Image (cartoon, rainbow, N blue to C red; front, top):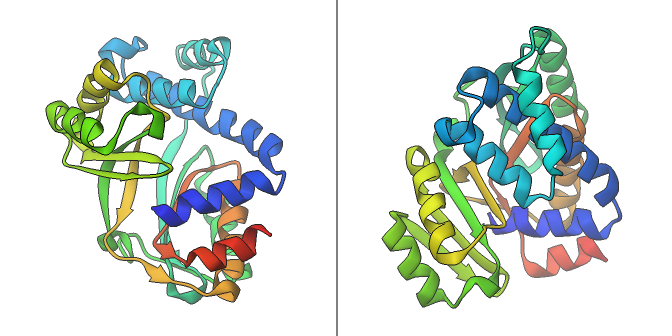
Length: 248
């Protein structure tokens, strides 16, 4: 996942943050509305909604936007979204998983397929690359949360399965079914997390050179810009030298 972290930083430095922030708010609000509509509108009684609200708060989504998204779920005119997962390969043979929420399956499928084709990828059948990833709960803390030993102790106590600590911070992993409980326990010991979400964790990664990364980033950026797409995950990796060239 280090590749994704650096990719996000490059996007930020390239000045896309304002448009990306607005789109992120929209995607997080949609997840809140869907989670609240599928279960109880009270986050304390709805684990999925609780996680969605946590992630929204971690990304500085205003309280009134969160409340409006929950309220929208209870209205008779609330949009009905279908959750769909697309799988395929991007440039360089990188495996890609796209998660979408849509009110028009045909539109979304057509858009996603078109983006894969346009950017040198190939959309496959469901399950074509999913076996290369593990569904996991991920909680991210900044380096200021504590040293590696402190965070590891808190993670073990909370029921997490693994911790990756580095100069940029700490990534804590747990079984996806335990994310709500683990994140709550971590919050008690380490404070509020930077991110709390369900992710697809690659079992292996594909190394790309500069040309491969440039081609892949065009595909990933295009997919993330689609209004129906919620998340995009790919099993790529690249050297620090390549990322430095990309961000130059």
